[in-house]
Image (cartoon, rainbow, N blue to C red; front, side):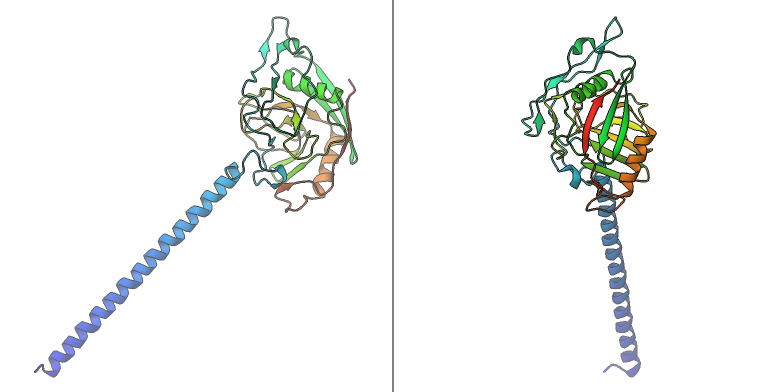
Length: 285
């Protein structure tokens, strides 16, 4: 029979093995917990990155519900694959291509295309008056910087294309402040029945006072939607800068921004809580 000493030693060995197993199990639980937390953190970070870059938001989503505040025309992204960049002419004009939009988008309005695109002026400016129920904004379009966009914008204004439309989207963030307009349907996917190529350079920026053209994710997809920048805005150089808005107009934009965004917080985007309806947008000079 085992002696008392042997029994005590056996009990001590058994207790030691139990303690070792418990320590090993605790270590394993801590390791598994750490791996789970790391995985969750990775998913959260990835989700934030994808949300910011718009991967979760398709081009056909409603603009006011988009999680990506990028100024986007939400028409089908393949609408104008044949639109070509402007071609300089010997006389100082440029040739613009206004390609038919064949996407089948039901929110398009057929108003023809700008006249004489083969001889589009590429110098000087155009002045337009955007009269809204919140105040007047004077828009100066730069034909030298963006001749095709300026010609299209001016043409659409002459056709009363913008009259009676609403500015459907407001973004109000510390480094991203814009009011988006130019869709007669107010859905974020409307525009003319043509598209054209972007006029940008790697140095294109979007400081306060900029007027720039929205587009889909596809190249050559600029139409009628435009955004008015009231805060120095950080964007990739993908959107044609067509001109500037005056200080009185910026005051109107800032007052609209102060009114907040319908349905979301002040750091998001959506329809402005203070509606902005374009009564007329006309060429004055």
